[in-house]
Image (cartoon, rainbow, N blue to C red; front, side, top):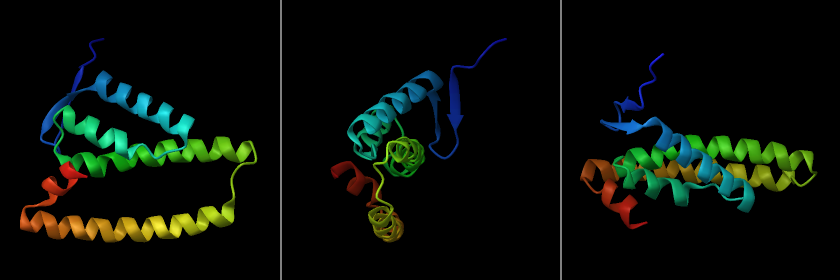
Length: 121
């Protein structure tokens, strides 16, 4: 059986090495689990470095953050470390901030400045 090592991503408009992307996910997920961070500050620049457009990298990175955060939450719940009251407050703030952020990116994309903003942050 022949496994294609490259996968075409139509939204990004490019092909990526499957093993490279899996390795990036593994590395950032591992660091997220160790340090308790979302990983976006690592994954987005790494995706940009391999040729993914900045807005696509930032949006796609959210998938990795959800996976790493979910598995981390389950592991910490089993250890008794999760404060659900604080978690709900953080979730409300995060959903609100994320929703507003997406609207800002939509406006900046119409103005042609979305990629610039992501690159400088």
